[in-house]
Image (cartoon, rainbow, N blue to C red; front, top):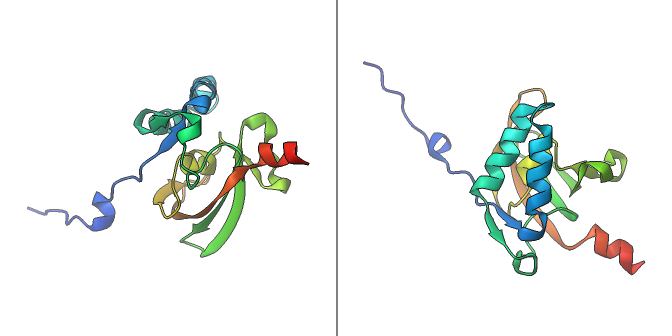
Length: 147
């Protein structure tokens, strides 16, 4: 009988996810609203929310990806680094690096800490590994208010 050999990649746990309580209701509503349009993505977001540790906004660590915080990540498949800002769908502007939380990369990044790596699937169904390199401590909403 053939026994599949497990590798560390097969048994690798998904990284921890931490979400601020101030975003929780909005994220759940977005996921539920997307169930008809994009059930796979909605399910992924609900899954991430379900396994997340929810903390008061003031206790959300500065090195954790959150709505409005710029994040630099590396696509380990291509070796490219990219900086984006996860935002709510109505604020998305790819030309300015603002990606909707309702995209595969937005769902993959939310709640991850610096140094975390995970597998994610592109819109084309390609599996990649992504690593969070840096999270900006100030979100872009605060920087706009300061101007």
